[in-house]
Each structure stands twice: as structure tokens, then as C-alpha cells.
Image: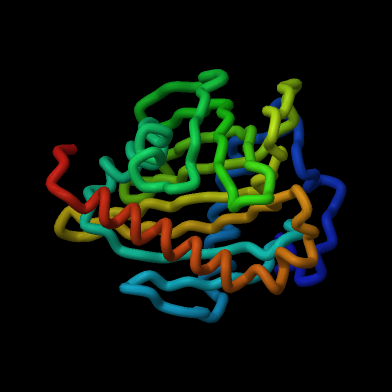
Length: 232
């Protein structure tokens, strides 16, 4: 894979919303692992209560990409379930912006791998349209210690909800890694185009601080909710 694209140029193969049929599951896993490797080289922009936050550019993604890295007192198998199979129930517990989610289709359901088509809706500040995402959502056991959770917007013949804009998730991922003592390391790379009136150039620079703040806020909320004595 080529090095990071800092100009925001988008190759023909990296369209905003590819068809579901055009997505290759194995290639998506390799892409996510490569993106995570590259993002580890970015300088840390700030640290917030043990969360390392950074941002940079990845090949074929026209917006700035955001990264967080944190260790959590949550067993890895539970963390995977909270982020994937139970994601919408959990989003309602920790995300102030989340409105509702829909499981549109189950593509695969196995212990080590699953995939769905989903729609998730989020509120935004006053005067801005709310955002909805329609995407392929998947989890995949990479090896004995690591599980990927993948997000990728797709083109779907589904009307946009009134009062919303259809935002885009370029290749986005969580990587859950088992640590000693039943703890987990959670890495997250978020590649999104908020759409609406937010132009791509604004998302590459001036919004960086706000997006890092939001990344930290979400991770802190997850830790607060998930690190309690809730059974696995």
C-alpha cells in the first residue's frame, strides 16, 4: 500500500459509498490493519486521562482521520460484544449524540466473524442537520488476542430521513487486543465526512481540535460506563 495521502486526493477505487457487493471482506481486514499500523506513527496530539489522541491522513481518504488508543478494565470478549453485537444498546448508554440504530440485514453470524448492514442516527448541535450513516458493520477475529470491528459506508437504496444528512464513514475500525489481567487495549481510527455544510477542507484542519475533544469525550464515557461491575 502506498504512503499516506496528505493532499486529500481520492483514487477511483476509494469512492465515498461503494456498493455492498464491491466490498471484499479480506481486503477490508488487511486495509484496517494497515491503517492502524500507519496511524501508530502519528505524533500524539494530546493525552487525556490515559487516552492518547492523534490525527493524520491515510491513503485514499479525503478527510483528516482521528485516532485514540486506551487501555480499559474490560475483558476483551465483553468489549467486542459491547462494540459490535450489542452496539446500539450500548451507544444509548454512553453517547449523548446517538438517537437510534437499525439492523437492516444480517450478512453473516458466526462466533469468530459477523457482518451486518445498519443505519445509525445522531443528533448534531442546533442549526445543523442531524447525521445518519448507512454502513457495512463487521467484526472479525484476527488471531487469538485481537479482534477487529469494521465500519464502511455503502450505497443503499434507502431514503435519507427528514431533517438528516447522509454522512460517510470511510474505512474505520476498532481493534480490541487482550492484555494480561483481563484488561483490553482499544485502538480506534475514525475516518468520516460529516457532509452537510461541512466542506472537506474544513474537516482537514480547523475542526481538528473539536474532533479530538469529541474522541476523548466518547472514550471517557465508554470507560465510565463499561468499567463498572456489570457481568460479562
